[in-house]
Length: 126
Image 1 (cartoon, rainbow, N blue to C red):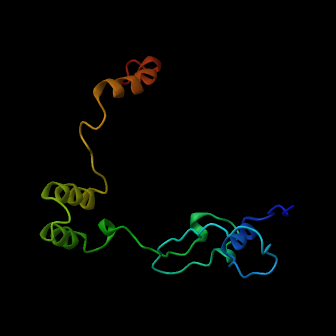
Image 2 (tube, rainbow, N blue to C red):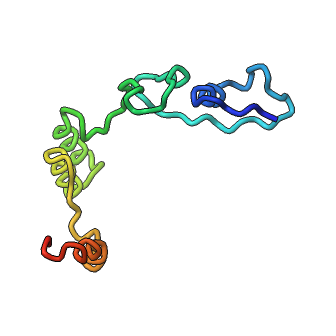
């Protein structure tokens, strides 16, 4: 029976070991392919003791709409027909405001149903 993992770091190291590591049963089926994250800067997760966002280095990639030249990227993507003019309008709104309101995405009945408990508790609030 395999020993239980005492720390998350032990689990992380076990998940990143190669097939050639000692201690592996030669008759066992091969492990699944490792989960790969495409980061701009490689991160050694084996040395991170507590898996919290603040313990990870900034490794990227960051979303292209968060890049300083996002407006130019939007223009290039429209020119290359990677996005439509309507999608470019949405991207520009996101880049300028940090959010986009997709009007009509949720029907009015669903919104009313979601707000109903709040309206019952505080009828004069809305």
